[in-house]
Image 1 (tube, rainbow, N blue to C red):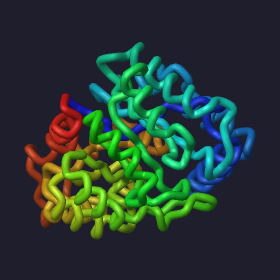
Image 2: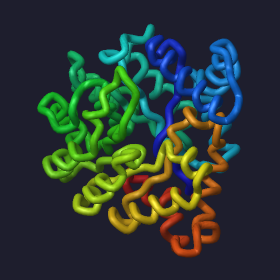
Image 3: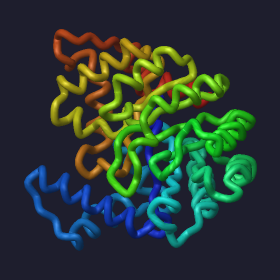
Image 4: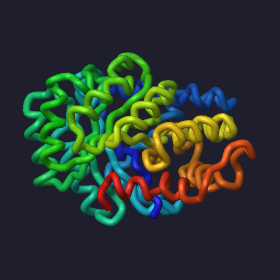
Length: 310
């Protein structure tokens, strides 16, 4: 079973205008690096409307089918207090994820999200799980809170009570989000204080991957995903293989989960291509680096099955 442990479903009205503006600029830079200049109108038509706006999840399901992925974890994002509110309240976004997952019950695993500073945040998560069928909790501390502060712990206590896996964004991000909140150091406290929680650190923490791997190697309940690394893997496969091998050796091969952060990089590196790069590690990695088929099977789904209780 292949599991994408980190992706999103987006509706234009769910996210604030600033989010789409920042994302469009990032998309423009990526295309410029590839030698193509796109106007804002082209970015909207060719990328946002074609790949990103997916209010019913149908585009995601097609992408999973094309890549040969069996299940995907889909993550709500709450940037309202950091970037301004979208047209649709965060409560309704969580409900919508539950409804979309009901359309594809064998394919999608929805994670709720709410900024812990919101009034009624704990109650929202409980409703999302008990009434709308969401299966985990996603937190993006860069919105302006630390994973290990008291207000976040209120949500984590509820997650522990409901036996939810919790996925945290880790790694640097552009302004107005604040990278200092997303250093993996803060997850060490969470792992210690909530030993019953299964905690997933997203993106290998990007440039902080060594610190994350070290913490994950010491904390039995701390895992990580490789979402967002497909551009690096495609551009410099030997360097990517070196990082991944070091993470597996330091954190443990059972700690790493496959993920794409889709649809963000899908227009640049199709999901199936990233999946192929991971699947072929035993044969295609540099000769100085050895990956076993058992390790790859764990990354592509076995580890996620254990973390998610599938």
